[in-house]
Amino acid sequence: MKIVIVDDERPARSELKYLLEQCRPEWKLIEASNCEEMMQVMEKEHPDGGFVDIQLGDMNGTTLASMLLNKNPEFALVFATAYQEYAVKAFELGALDYLLKPYSVEQVERAAKRIEERVAGRREKHEEELSKLTIVGSTGVELIDISDIIYISTEDRGCNIHLQDKSFFQNQSLNYYEERLERYHFFRIYKSFLINLDYIEKFVPSYNNGYGVCLKYIEKEIFPIGRAQCKELRKMFEF
Image 1 (cartoon, rainbow, N blue to C red):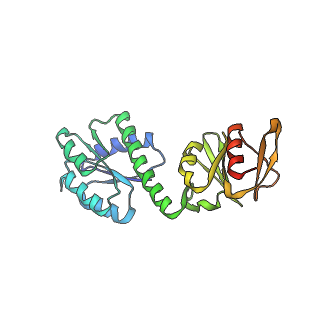
Image 2: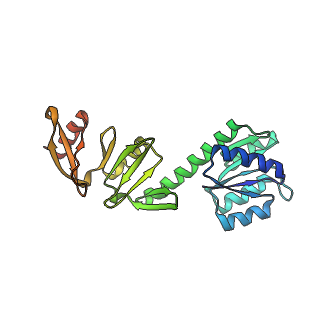
Image 3: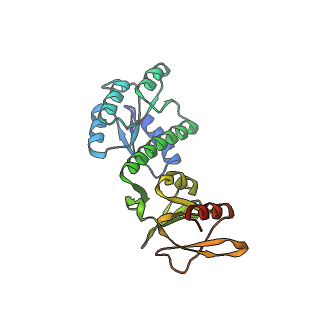
């Protein structure tokens, strides 16, 4: 994620940058000292959001914010300033948060979460329109067709997304994907597995009069089905 810090005072930029690096070391942080530099950043870097000071040398921060949002209405805007009196105006403009100097870790963490929620919501909206899922990796961001996902399994604190010929690890919970893919024929058969119903090959008897499921392209593996989920699947597939 690319985030810009706009402040005409270098120490203030450095302080905020340091705190953000502690909270979100994976973010790319870009600095701008005035409006002109900020607009250049918008053109070259296309940042996801930014922290904007109110009193800039060449322009009031609220005027700059209006320009930024006019250029990109989805820009995740946070004001970071020493002045309390502009808070109402800031939220009228659509700011996600309003930080007051001197900054605290708690303030910065709260603002970072709000930026992430805004950007994630925007990505999900775009993904739903395209029937794509965003995969974030070390070499960049990849879009995959949701219809190509065979199943998703939990691993450590994240999930593995399995396609026919490869898999991707993502730092999201299975609950997140269950909700995200609800309208795409995905079903949670067990606490650790979310499957694409279109890839079911057969059901096989299991212990205690239950069933497991075999999926296309996944050889020699039978996935367990929870008791309640088994009843639901039997109704769904009439067996």
